[in-house]
Image (cartoon, rainbow, N blue to C red):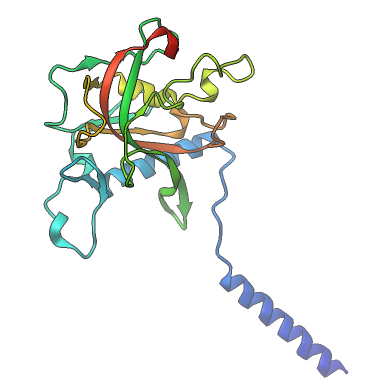
Length: 244
């Protein structure tokens, strides 16, 4: 009887050990917001080392097996500008309007800019896996570039929330990404480009979580998310009263 008990105990311990070996350790969100901000910063730097812009300005990851991109410049080599908020913007050389129209991103201004944009807006969470901090892709907030029906979008909600949906309980900060607005204010937009015009993306805006929603409740349910915007502004004008 004792031998049977020992065999069962040994088998149980072996099963438990095997189970622990097979389990994948999941990333746990740090309680300290300063750790989160540090993860974001490290991961964004790595992202800029591992990606480049193709001939139309799309963000592409360097290939480890294809030498075709060996001569491409990293995002980190394209004169990225880091703002005090942590937002980083990159203007793509040769892709800016001349002179273009300034973009007033102050949602409360009577002369705030309406924009029509071709945009790929992805969101990530910076994770630490066995000491390797990187941006883990979580999804697309907006993508008007890929697909057969690609077409510019006017005033995406995360850029401008119309007065009709803004309330005391759900203010603009519940919808709008402040870091995107800040980054866009350093760009000029084209004016009157037709929807069917081929895109030539102007650049990149990277918004760490602290300059987006951080840990606040928001319309998209995206706390701790870092956003990467790859875009071209097809049209810029003072927002008409009926679009406010």
